[in-house]
Picture 1 (cartoon, rainbow, N blue to C red):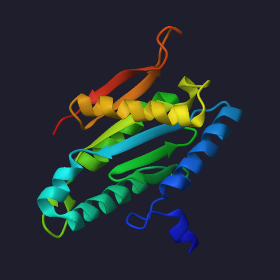
Picture 2: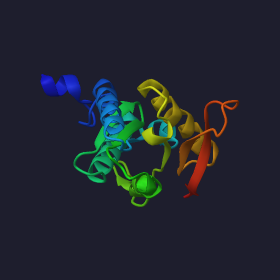
Picture 3: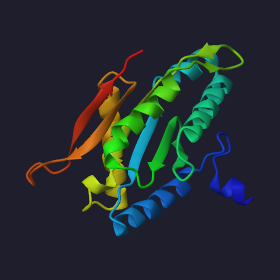
Picture 4: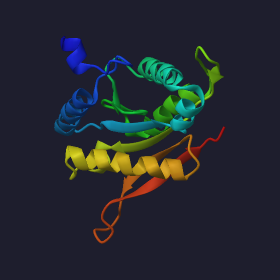
Length: 188
């Protein structure tokens, strides 16, 4: 019963409530220790086309395999949860901020490089990722930090999908909010 209460039943990842709670703890811990926690909001590109063309059971297989790949691509102490629908939340604990670009690209590449074998066919899927670093938004609460990652994700979609965008704080107070930094745009 505990597992069912804390995990997503389809993917066996942490469910939304638990991953957000754990993210909050990690951010608080990293701030106390003057480290950086990285939030990656990951969304499968064109997922609706998968379910429309091949059915919901094929969509479920894709979600399960994406979850498996993400879980196997992070360190043992990092966190992966299903945020909702085809969105996943990855929390990189104590992540060296100089490595964030590389880590996000690795996760994106793990999804895009190899087709996902389903019962109906092999499908190539890609993922867009919005990123926020706790060290860049020290004045932000947890919800506002999550919002920064959430705002970076549509920027990755708008840039052509299958890419990563990192939220960057504005340099002056007049322009509150974040700018976005392009990492690499990979299109399949």
